Length: 341
Image (cartoon, rainbow, N blue to C red):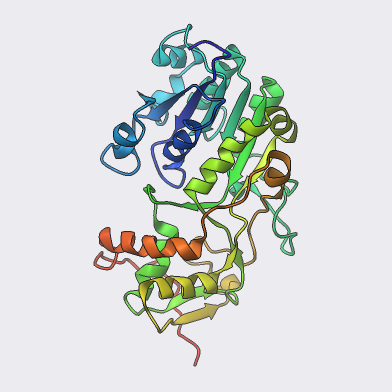
């Protein structure tokens, strides 16, 4: 693979909230006419028996997968040269990189950026996080890319190192909560079903109208690939929110989950989050959701093809198949609140 041959590299973490994005992105890139080859540099700390890693060989037959120590102590000694050696040596180069692993510009993260510089890549797409945002209590919502961020966050430092220090053609995507068929983290929506199927009260802070962005990983993948539509415009804009344009309130999600499970009675209890805390689900005490307007207008992303309401039908079947209704539910950190009569 030589520069200019449409070679794409996906640097993929070991799992968690972004664990399935490399898999979903590889499927999208394999169908893009600008991409001639796809390689996944996979953190070797992943569990090969879990989703989505157990499906790499069967579902991605044309994708090369290379294991590497991308997390832990071993990653701290990685350099651009050692990373290139893992990928096949100095003659193997890439035109496009999607980094869905690095938490900052140190160790493996720095090595990825330095290798990108050595390869003179056409574009480095970094999967950052909308969790960096520091919105005012009264918004604006949805949050635009100009929303203040945690400047000391590792993701912000990665952006600065790649774009400002190295001068790389960086595109930084900021996703929110993700779910999908090949996920290895189901916490967000499972939280609702765990309580619904047991007839438990669902404690939600505030009045439950706060909106949340829950995005199917297939839509995140098409969004992450959309900088290929116009790399120059993508690099010029640089920062893009990465979330569904279909939003729901916390209470609404509870009602939709109940409908998917065929449950008629939903016991929701609202409480003062300032007094009791936000609970174990990643609730916010106020709105906290992004606007994907920029990536739609600048890069032509058509919007989410999937809706949470429709997805909850297969999701509930997956929940049952994973033994969700029988598992030992730990409620030690649960906010205790009674349903108002």
